[in-house]
Length: 316
Ligand code: BDR
Ligand code: CA
Image (tube, rainbow, N blue to C red; front, side, top):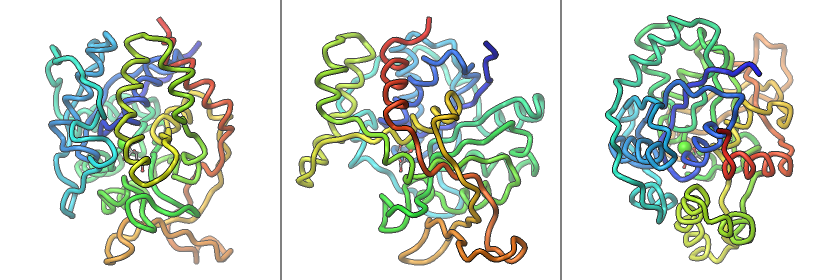
């Protein structure tokens, strides 16, 4: 099997951790580096989470690069009410033995320059590192084989505001830079990721009984999200937002995408971070924004079964 070299750019984060686990459990992928960015939690916390998770999974061979600790222009926003203060819910990760390998933006620029057309980037946090790489050396993102981005809400409501999804809301200017970079992009928005859900019953019946290091981590990590749903008077669930972006690299046939003309709102008290989609059906030169491949549907059952298999019985 040909393995696809990938860089994960992430703000760990509970579902980020699940995405890292899925990537590491998938023989189709060779994770050549994990880049961290400020997002769900501050950069130092997220970087420590990435390192601690690799320690837990005994994968300290994978280098971790620390990236941007602030969005390009706006003040940082975090999502600790969802992911917990530590970002890992109630899971406690081991103290990392591994050192940070270097700067994420340097790593992105150098790796994409050295291996043009070969690397897939899977970005599951705010897009600050990718935008900084593009600003540092214009054309950098076009050198990726593909840039898969978890972000945005197209026809769905947002999750940070009524119209904005967290990753694009946290750094809308970075999302704007990436959308306009000319890279081969696949956006995996809330429209698709809200179709892939783990329920409390899944956790209790399919994951908890396994009693492995990985399964116990998942059980502990999702508890904060579940508590939040209970407080809101809703059924406890966890969306597999970030794992689905990894799924798009390992099993693209499970996603159904369409090319949409989109742009990102970078100002506006009520609309910052919103994806604006031009559905007017005008001739393409008159359309707003850029034509971008957006995953709108997923075979949720097949993805969930792949996810559970790969995360709970990783490839050796
Ligand atoms: C995205 O926001 C973050 O909280 C999650 O990790 C995911 O990347 C979903 O909107
Ligand atoms: Ca994330």
